[in-house]
Image (cartoon, rainbow, N blue to C red):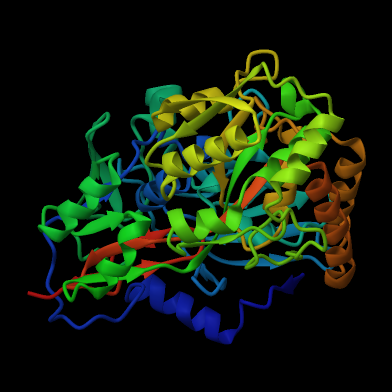
Length: 519
């Protein structure tokens, strides 16, 4: 066996510090915080980590369950419930060493059996696991001893270590699974720094500090996620002190928030692409010429500038530019309404029919306003468009329906890979195995040649050769256009200037666990 690069002597030293003294050495003068109020736009649909589709509830799950590894904002891996791992020379066997002395918040011991149970559930075909594509290369998980797991892969997969930092494989208390069954999604029990205290649907999600957490004691006693769909209301509540953190404020007001001496704004470019999904298999969008026409009909640069106020950048390839495997496409869909009309004419498009468009509200930056702009651009070239708005849980339920039940034709959605690798974007959204209800590829893209290319990319271990394959896949899906390629969001989060030490990442996560608050 050989050790992975991150597990150097320095790493082992850090691991020892974590096991003994806690995650960070913090001056005792830092005050404890009785409650942190966070304004968010959507409610969670589930708090089962294996069922997650959305970065914000995933973020919540990390606070409740913790993860095997932690991915830092600069993409380094640090130990959490796993202290270290080793990988065989052929890349097919990963040996995971688990932290000893950890208990779930219900008192159940965390060990190899509990960790294996989570992997087995996530791999169980009968279970609803939307992101299973990230672990389908796992052939078997074996228990070596009470605190050691062995993961056998079907083929070497470069991003598998980073996948261990995802809530997808966060261990759940076996006792909770036995007690609640699948209702564990409403009754989460993990080994993380927080415990769910209260969940009032559509109003708030309240977590309290896990006093038996294995790591350093969180500085925040209670975190209250207040569900406030209206962006302007969240922002106003931040300014008046009714909340301390505003998740994704109005893009139009980011500049004024930055200028406010009482507010801090973080906005790293994220992994999240925002797009209009175009149903590849049925409806008017099953015609490639129509899909390409819709792309030329929309002025993406204007949307970024005039609606999003530069809190995003236009898409120039099918994934975010911060991902390994991103390529700027040679052929761009620059705004050209005349070309769009020409393509629709070539496709014999029926201008008397009405195109159905769907959008969530409060999930992404100005999501409804972006959808309204796309609707206006399509109407400007003669396409009749009906736009409907849904709350997030209802919207997600619609995304998961199979092709014979789906009502989706044109729909706004975002995709934010949790791993800084193009695989989760190119495979997770466009490989046909991820079409609903198995996965989250709601555009139902189905191209056998593309599937072969992406399968080959997962088998290739040489980074340079893998990049060549990912470029070929990107060019193919870009040309097929199962999306209107809109923009890559910046992850905008605003919070009180009194807060120090907030960790904000490009994977749309933020961690208030060890913040300090100035008086």
